[in-house]
Length: 366
Image (cartoon, rainbow, N blue to C red; front, side, top):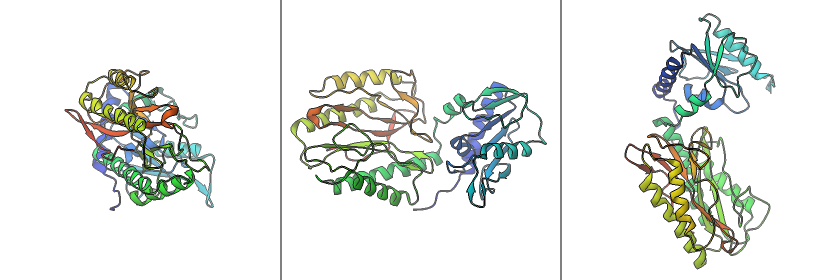
Protein backbone atom coordinates (compact mmCIF):
# COMPACT_ATOMS: atom_id res chain seq x y z
CA UNK A 1 0.00 0.00 0.00
CA UNK A 2 1.39 3.40 -0.96
CA UNK A 3 2.06 5.91 1.78
CA UNK A 4 -0.37 8.74 2.28
CA UNK A 5 0.87 12.06 0.93
CA UNK A 6 -0.35 15.45 2.08
CA UNK A 7 -2.21 17.18 -0.73
CA UNK A 8 -1.15 20.80 -0.39
CA UNK A 9 -3.63 22.04 -3.00
CA UNK A 10 -6.61 20.54 -1.18
CA UNK A 11 -5.37 21.91 2.15
CA UNK A 12 -5.07 25.35 0.57
CA UNK A 13 -8.58 24.94 -0.78
CA UNK A 14 -9.87 24.35 2.75
CA UNK A 15 -7.99 27.43 3.90
CA UNK A 16 -9.72 29.46 1.16
CA UNK A 17 -13.11 28.19 2.30
CA UNK A 18 -12.28 29.35 5.82
CA UNK A 19 -11.02 32.69 4.45
CA UNK A 20 -14.40 33.23 2.78
CA UNK A 21 -16.06 32.71 6.15
CA UNK A 22 -13.57 35.03 7.83
CA UNK A 23 -14.44 37.75 5.35
CA UNK A 24 -18.16 37.20 5.94
CA UNK A 25 -17.68 37.38 9.73
CA UNK A 26 -15.16 40.25 9.48
CA UNK A 27 -12.40 38.28 11.22
CA UNK A 28 -8.78 39.43 10.98
CA UNK A 29 -7.27 36.22 12.32
CA UNK A 30 -8.31 32.67 13.23
CA UNK A 31 -6.31 30.54 15.68
CA UNK A 32 -7.07 26.82 16.01
CA UNK A 33 -5.75 24.47 18.70
CA UNK A 34 -7.71 21.28 18.15
CA UNK A 35 -5.51 18.65 16.53
CA UNK A 36 -8.15 17.78 13.94
CA UNK A 37 -8.54 21.41 12.84
CA UNK A 38 -4.78 21.85 12.56
CA UNK A 39 -4.72 18.74 10.38
CA UNK A 40 -7.72 19.85 8.32
CA UNK A 41 -5.98 23.11 7.44
CA UNK A 42 -2.34 22.03 7.10
CA UNK A 43 -2.52 18.31 6.30
CA UNK A 44 -0.24 17.37 9.20
CA UNK A 45 -1.47 14.83 11.75
CA UNK A 46 -0.02 15.26 15.24
CA UNK A 47 -0.44 12.81 18.10
CA UNK A 48 -2.98 13.45 20.83
CA UNK A 49 -0.19 14.00 23.38
CA UNK A 50 0.89 17.21 21.60
CA UNK A 51 -0.55 20.73 21.46
CA UNK A 52 -0.01 22.14 17.96
CA UNK A 53 -1.69 25.32 16.77
CA UNK A 54 -2.31 27.13 13.51
CA UNK A 55 -3.20 30.73 12.68
CA UNK A 56 -4.80 31.92 9.46
CA UNK A 57 -4.67 35.64 8.71
CA UNK A 58 -7.21 37.47 6.60
CA UNK A 59 -4.56 37.93 3.90
CA UNK A 60 -4.29 34.15 3.53
CA UNK A 61 -1.02 33.69 5.42
CA UNK A 62 -1.03 30.50 7.50
CA UNK A 63 1.33 30.01 10.42
CA UNK A 64 1.78 26.52 11.86
CA UNK A 65 3.21 25.91 15.33
CA UNK A 66 4.45 22.31 15.54
CA UNK A 67 5.77 20.26 18.46
CA UNK A 68 9.56 19.87 18.61
CA UNK A 69 10.45 20.52 14.96
CA UNK A 70 8.84 21.66 11.70
CA UNK A 71 7.26 18.83 9.67
CA UNK A 72 8.78 17.89 6.33
CA UNK A 73 5.64 18.92 4.46
CA UNK A 74 2.77 21.20 5.45
CA UNK A 75 0.35 23.63 3.83
CA UNK A 76 1.81 26.58 5.73
CA UNK A 77 3.60 29.83 4.87
CA UNK A 78 5.44 30.08 8.18
CA UNK A 79 6.30 27.18 10.48
CA UNK A 80 7.53 27.61 14.03
CA UNK A 81 8.07 25.01 16.72
CA UNK A 82 7.89 24.71 20.48
CA UNK A 83 9.66 22.25 22.77
CA UNK A 84 7.10 19.56 23.52
CA UNK A 85 9.63 17.33 25.29
CA UNK A 86 12.63 17.91 27.50
CA UNK A 87 15.11 15.04 27.34
CA UNK A 88 12.30 12.82 25.91
CA UNK A 89 9.82 13.70 28.70
CA UNK A 90 6.52 15.17 27.52
CA UNK A 91 5.85 18.55 29.04
CA UNK A 92 2.53 19.12 30.76
CA UNK A 93 2.64 22.84 29.92
CA UNK A 94 2.63 22.34 26.16
CA UNK A 95 -0.41 24.60 25.50
CA UNK A 96 1.43 27.51 27.11
CA UNK A 97 4.65 26.75 25.22
CA UNK A 98 2.78 26.49 21.91
CA UNK A 99 0.92 29.74 22.57
CA UNK A 100 4.16 31.57 23.32
CA UNK A 101 5.85 30.25 20.18
CA UNK A 102 2.89 31.05 17.94
CA UNK A 103 2.47 34.51 19.46
CA UNK A 104 6.14 35.22 18.80
CA UNK A 105 5.77 34.09 15.18
CA UNK A 106 2.79 36.42 14.75
CA UNK A 107 4.47 39.37 16.48
CA UNK A 108 5.45 41.12 13.27
CA UNK A 109 1.99 40.92 11.72
CA UNK A 110 -0.90 43.33 12.12
CA UNK A 111 -2.75 42.93 15.43
CA UNK A 112 -6.27 41.59 14.96
CA UNK A 113 -9.35 43.49 16.02
CA UNK A 114 -11.70 40.49 15.63
CA UNK A 115 -10.22 37.10 16.39
CA UNK A 116 -11.82 33.74 15.61
CA UNK A 117 -10.96 31.00 18.13
CA UNK A 118 -12.31 27.68 19.36
CA UNK A 119 -14.01 28.58 22.61
CA UNK A 120 -13.59 24.99 23.87
CA UNK A 121 -9.78 25.03 23.62
CA UNK A 122 -8.53 28.62 23.40
CA UNK A 123 -6.57 29.35 26.55
CA UNK A 124 -5.50 32.45 28.42
CA UNK A 125 -1.90 31.83 27.43
CA UNK A 126 -2.60 33.90 24.32
CA UNK A 127 -2.24 37.52 25.34
CA UNK A 128 -4.16 39.03 22.41
CA UNK A 129 -6.37 42.02 23.02
CA UNK A 130 -9.13 41.51 20.48
CA UNK A 131 -12.82 40.77 20.26
CA UNK A 132 -13.10 36.98 20.16
CA UNK A 133 -15.63 35.03 18.09
CA UNK A 134 -16.29 31.30 18.41
CA UNK A 135 -15.17 29.81 15.09
CA UNK A 136 -15.89 26.17 16.04
CA UNK A 137 -19.44 26.01 14.61
CA UNK A 138 -18.10 27.34 11.32
CA UNK A 139 -15.26 24.81 11.23
CA UNK A 140 -17.58 21.90 12.01
CA UNK A 141 -19.87 23.02 9.20
CA UNK A 142 -17.03 23.39 6.70
CA UNK A 143 -15.68 19.97 7.60
CA UNK A 144 -18.86 18.29 6.40
CA UNK A 145 -17.79 18.41 2.73
CA UNK A 146 -15.06 15.82 2.37
CA UNK A 147 -12.28 16.47 -0.15
CA UNK A 148 -10.50 13.77 -2.17
CA UNK A 149 -7.64 13.39 0.33
CA UNK A 150 -10.12 12.97 3.17
CA UNK A 151 -12.13 10.43 1.18
CA UNK A 152 -8.92 8.48 0.54
CA UNK A 153 -8.22 8.15 4.27
CA UNK A 154 -11.85 7.37 5.05
CA UNK A 155 -11.75 4.78 2.29
CA UNK A 156 -8.67 3.17 3.79
CA UNK A 157 -10.31 3.02 7.22
CA UNK A 158 -13.55 1.63 5.76
CA UNK A 159 -11.61 -1.00 3.82
CA UNK A 160 -10.04 -2.05 7.11
CA UNK A 161 -13.49 -2.75 8.53
CA UNK A 162 -14.22 -4.94 5.52
CA UNK A 163 -11.09 -6.94 6.23
CA UNK A 164 -12.04 -7.15 9.91
CA UNK A 165 -15.49 -8.56 9.14
CA UNK A 166 -14.03 -11.11 6.73
CA UNK A 167 -11.65 -12.25 9.47
CA UNK A 168 -14.43 -12.32 12.08
CA UNK A 169 -16.57 -14.53 9.86
CA UNK A 170 -13.61 -16.85 9.36
CA UNK A 171 -12.71 -17.33 13.03
CA UNK A 172 -15.94 -16.88 15.03
CA UNK A 173 -17.07 -19.95 16.98
CA UNK A 174 -18.62 -20.76 20.36
CA UNK A 175 -16.06 -20.68 23.15
CA UNK A 176 -13.88 -18.00 21.59
CA UNK A 177 -12.80 -15.32 24.04
CA UNK A 178 -14.02 -11.79 23.25
CA UNK A 179 -10.52 -10.45 23.95
CA UNK A 180 -9.08 -12.82 21.37
CA UNK A 181 -11.59 -11.59 18.80
CA UNK A 182 -10.66 -8.00 19.63
CA UNK A 183 -6.94 -8.68 19.28
CA UNK A 184 -7.33 -10.58 16.02
CA UNK A 185 -9.46 -7.85 14.50
CA UNK A 186 -7.14 -5.06 15.62
CA UNK A 187 -4.21 -6.89 14.01
CA UNK A 188 -6.24 -7.24 10.81
CA UNK A 189 -7.02 -3.52 10.76
CA UNK A 190 -3.38 -2.56 11.29
CA UNK A 191 -2.30 -4.85 8.47
CA UNK A 192 -5.02 -3.44 6.20
CA UNK A 193 -4.13 0.19 6.92
CA UNK A 194 -0.42 -0.49 6.72
CA UNK A 195 0.34 1.48 9.86
CA UNK A 196 -0.72 2.07 13.45
CA UNK A 197 -4.36 3.01 13.94
CA UNK A 198 -5.19 6.44 15.36
CA UNK A 199 -8.46 5.15 16.77
CA UNK A 200 -10.35 1.92 17.29
CA UNK A 201 -13.92 0.75 17.25
CA UNK A 202 -16.78 0.55 19.62
CA UNK A 203 -18.40 -2.80 20.32
CA UNK A 204 -16.72 -6.19 20.72
CA UNK A 205 -19.01 -7.79 23.32
CA UNK A 206 -21.12 -10.78 22.25
CA UNK A 207 -24.70 -11.49 23.27
CA UNK A 208 -25.37 -7.87 24.26
CA UNK A 209 -26.16 -4.63 22.41
CA UNK A 210 -22.60 -3.40 22.65
CA UNK A 211 -19.61 -2.69 24.81
CA UNK A 212 -15.86 -3.31 25.01
CA UNK A 213 -14.45 -6.84 24.83
CA UNK A 214 -14.57 -8.81 28.06
CA UNK A 215 -12.56 -11.75 29.35
CA UNK A 216 -15.51 -13.95 28.44
CA UNK A 217 -16.17 -16.83 26.08
CA UNK A 218 -18.90 -16.31 23.50
CA UNK A 219 -21.80 -18.73 23.65
CA UNK A 220 -23.61 -20.93 21.19
CA UNK A 221 -26.76 -19.26 19.85
CA UNK A 222 -25.64 -15.70 20.52
CA UNK A 223 -25.54 -12.94 17.96
CA UNK A 224 -22.24 -11.05 17.99
CA UNK A 225 -22.68 -7.34 17.23
CA UNK A 226 -19.35 -6.01 15.98
CA UNK A 227 -19.51 -2.22 15.66
CA UNK A 228 -16.08 -1.33 14.29
CA UNK A 229 -14.55 2.10 13.83
CA UNK A 230 -10.84 2.01 13.05
CA UNK A 231 -9.28 5.38 12.25
CA UNK A 232 -6.51 5.94 9.72
CA UNK A 233 -4.52 9.13 10.34
CA UNK A 234 -7.41 10.55 12.30
CA UNK A 235 -10.23 9.68 9.87
CA UNK A 236 -12.81 7.32 11.39
CA UNK A 237 -14.74 4.57 9.69
CA UNK A 238 -17.85 3.27 11.45
CA UNK A 239 -19.55 0.06 10.36
CA UNK A 240 -21.53 -2.66 12.08
CA UNK A 241 -22.39 -6.25 11.29
CA UNK A 242 -23.97 -9.00 13.41
CA UNK A 243 -22.74 -12.59 13.21
CA UNK A 244 -24.34 -15.81 14.38
CA UNK A 245 -21.70 -17.28 16.68
CA UNK A 246 -22.63 -20.85 15.72
CA UNK A 247 -23.14 -19.94 12.03
CA UNK A 248 -26.72 -21.29 12.27
CA UNK A 249 -29.06 -18.32 12.85
CA UNK A 250 -32.59 -19.13 13.93
CA UNK A 251 -35.53 -18.31 11.69
CA UNK A 252 -36.39 -15.42 14.01
CA UNK A 253 -32.85 -14.04 13.88
CA UNK A 254 -32.79 -14.40 10.09
CA UNK A 255 -36.11 -12.60 9.67
CA UNK A 256 -34.96 -9.75 11.93
CA UNK A 257 -31.73 -9.41 9.95
CA UNK A 258 -33.63 -9.16 6.67
CA UNK A 259 -35.95 -6.53 8.15
CA UNK A 260 -33.01 -4.43 9.36
CA UNK A 261 -31.21 -4.73 6.03
CA UNK A 262 -34.34 -3.56 4.18
CA UNK A 263 -34.00 -0.19 5.91
CA UNK A 264 -30.98 0.58 3.71
CA UNK A 265 -33.23 0.59 0.66
CA UNK A 266 -35.24 3.41 2.28
CA UNK A 267 -32.04 5.33 3.02
CA UNK A 268 -30.69 4.95 -0.50
CA UNK A 269 -33.99 6.00 -2.06
CA UNK A 270 -34.52 8.98 0.24
CA UNK A 271 -31.16 10.69 0.70
CA UNK A 272 -30.19 13.54 -1.61
CA UNK A 273 -28.88 17.07 -1.02
CA UNK A 274 -31.50 19.09 0.85
CA UNK A 275 -33.38 16.08 2.25
CA UNK A 276 -34.32 16.17 5.93
CA UNK A 277 -32.39 13.88 8.27
CA UNK A 278 -35.23 14.03 10.79
CA UNK A 279 -37.75 12.96 8.17
CA UNK A 280 -35.55 10.00 7.22
CA UNK A 281 -35.31 8.93 10.87
CA UNK A 282 -39.10 8.92 11.15
CA UNK A 283 -39.45 6.99 7.89
CA UNK A 284 -37.02 4.29 9.02
CA UNK A 285 -38.55 4.18 12.51
CA UNK A 286 -41.95 3.43 10.97
CA UNK A 287 -40.39 0.59 9.01
CA UNK A 288 -38.59 -0.81 12.05
CA UNK A 289 -41.76 -0.64 14.16
CA UNK A 290 -43.34 -3.16 11.77
CA UNK A 291 -40.77 -5.83 12.64
CA UNK A 292 -42.14 -9.06 14.09
CA UNK A 293 -39.61 -8.98 16.92
CA UNK A 294 -37.39 -6.42 18.59
CA UNK A 295 -37.26 -2.66 19.01
CA UNK A 296 -35.23 0.12 17.43
CA UNK A 297 -34.53 2.84 19.99
CA UNK A 298 -31.34 4.74 19.12
CA UNK A 299 -30.14 7.21 16.51
CA UNK A 300 -30.17 6.20 12.85
CA UNK A 301 -26.65 7.47 12.19
CA UNK A 302 -24.28 10.40 11.95
CA UNK A 303 -21.52 11.95 9.91
CA UNK A 304 -17.96 10.64 10.15
CA UNK A 305 -14.59 12.22 9.50
CA UNK A 306 -11.95 13.55 11.88
CA UNK A 307 -14.28 12.72 14.78
CA UNK A 308 -16.39 9.56 15.21
CA UNK A 309 -19.67 11.53 15.29
CA UNK A 310 -20.06 14.62 13.10
CA UNK A 311 -22.87 16.28 11.16
CA UNK A 312 -25.19 15.40 9.60
CA UNK A 313 -27.03 14.00 12.61
CA UNK A 314 -29.62 11.34 11.78
CA UNK A 315 -31.27 11.95 15.10
CA UNK A 316 -34.57 13.48 16.18
CA UNK A 317 -32.70 15.85 18.50
CA UNK A 318 -31.25 17.67 15.46
CA UNK A 319 -32.92 19.08 12.36
CA UNK A 320 -30.07 18.70 9.86
CA UNK A 321 -30.38 18.40 6.11
CA UNK A 322 -28.11 16.35 3.88
CA UNK A 323 -25.49 18.23 1.87
CA UNK A 324 -23.44 17.15 -1.11
CA UNK A 325 -20.06 15.93 0.16
CA UNK A 326 -21.38 14.57 3.47
CA UNK A 327 -20.08 11.16 4.55
CA UNK A 328 -22.48 9.54 7.00
CA UNK A 329 -23.47 6.26 8.58
CA UNK A 330 -26.85 4.58 8.76
CA UNK A 331 -27.22 2.01 11.56
CA UNK A 332 -30.69 0.52 12.02
CA UNK A 333 -31.05 -2.24 14.59
CA UNK A 334 -33.47 -4.53 16.39
CA UNK A 335 -32.98 -5.79 19.94
CA UNK A 336 -34.86 -8.38 22.00
CA UNK A 337 -33.94 -11.20 24.41
CA UNK A 338 -35.26 -13.71 21.87
CA UNK A 339 -32.64 -12.49 19.39
CA UNK A 340 -29.74 -12.97 21.85
CA UNK A 341 -29.42 -9.99 21.97
CA UNK A 342 -30.03 -8.25 18.68
CA UNK A 343 -28.92 -7.12 15.27
CA UNK A 344 -27.39 -3.84 14.19
CA UNK A 345 -26.19 -3.23 10.64
CA UNK A 346 -24.33 -0.09 9.66
CA UNK A 347 -23.24 1.22 6.28
CA UNK A 348 -21.23 4.27 5.28
CA UNK A 349 -22.45 6.55 2.49
CA UNK A 350 -21.28 9.65 0.64
CA UNK A 351 -23.90 12.16 -0.48
CA UNK A 352 -23.60 12.97 -4.19
CA UNK A 353 -25.40 15.54 -6.32
CA UNK A 354 -28.15 13.04 -7.10
CA UNK A 355 -28.24 10.63 -4.18
CA UNK A 356 -25.77 8.48 -2.27
CA UNK A 357 -22.76 6.29 -2.94
CA UNK A 358 -22.33 3.18 -0.77
CA UNK A 359 -18.82 3.08 0.70
CA UNK A 360 -19.09 -0.17 2.70
CA UNK A 361 -20.22 -2.86 0.29
CA UNK A 362 -19.61 -5.80 2.63
CA UNK A 363 -21.93 -8.81 3.21
CA UNK A 364 -24.83 -8.08 5.57
CA UNK A 365 -25.91 -11.61 6.45
CA UNK A 366 -25.59 -13.34 9.80
